Length: 305
Image (tube, rainbow, N blue to C red; front, side, top):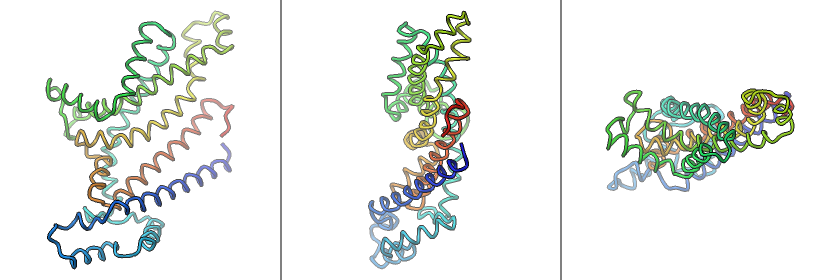
């Protein structure tokens, strides 16, 4: 990847983040007045107007937007309406909990999904392949919140083996990670299998088999590397899926991450928190996509992004 291409990618990433900031700002204001949620129903009109002035919500929307952009240009994400603290500090305190949940799910989905996809391709249309494909199709079809509730009822309520909510110890991580893992695991299995089947039909693979190379050498040294390009793409996309999906999982399991914080902040119209969470998520997605382009070149040097 040349310096010009890298600069172009960075510029596109910044434009994307600017678009996300603008969209989130105006969409949030369409949901209503947060002051009405902050104050009791018996609050007088004078109290409501006073709080609006304190928060800057009495200004016209274009002026609020310009003020917001000026703050962002200085690295100021605003002050949380609910917590009375800098929004960035509140969000960053929750990031470790989300990463604690998302990273194991992503790593396990790759470590389990790719080998299962390869083995399923090797045993195409045999019982193992049909079983893996059936299970992965079910995992991809079931909503995450439904799977989470089933796991809670079975392992937490019926068997009593695992805690069903909170972040008290390592065992608290098992059920939410399993829930978050299922969908990306199913996608990676199915894509690895289809990509492997396509590569196994290539002429150079048949030539390698005709030369008498072992099946292990043909599969893992020749076919697997060339079948990883679409898998790398989907793994990059799964990062965003895990981050966005964690909002539901964290709510189901009362996990104190940025997903649960975002859901709570949407309910109370805490605009600075919502904007910060969306911006951090979008930035993570953009960075991962750029990193995926680098990995393409490493896996297949013929690609010059």
